[in-house]
Length: 126
Image (cartoon, rainbow, N blue to C red; front, side, top):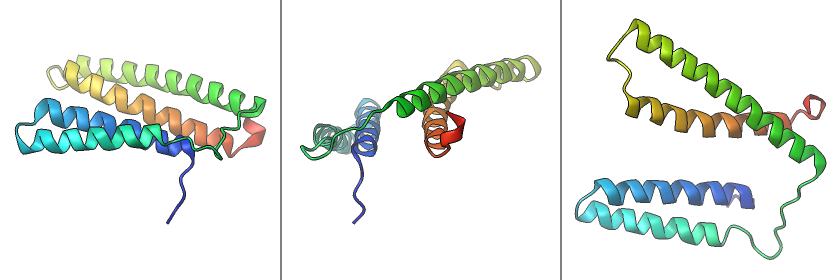
């Protein structure tokens, strides 16, 4: 079995919390019970993400890589907002507010993680 570090466990737990909350909020009956179970699993994973032997190592290079990655993520998100504005101008009634928020939430988190992983593997870029 693959051993996940604390950061991945925390991300999986947070994802399960979000998925469970959506299932409870949108579901009726059995689906809400499944959502409650997923919520509980997310809480357990988040609480057990850091074991006694697992310490997060945060040095200056990791901090710089994280800050640069999140700055790139924000910049890419602003460019995505500009693209969505152009899409709304040229194709009205195609993009809804709910769609834009969903795209932005996913894009910001995914691009932040992707830039962070990319910069951590390229020491000369930091």
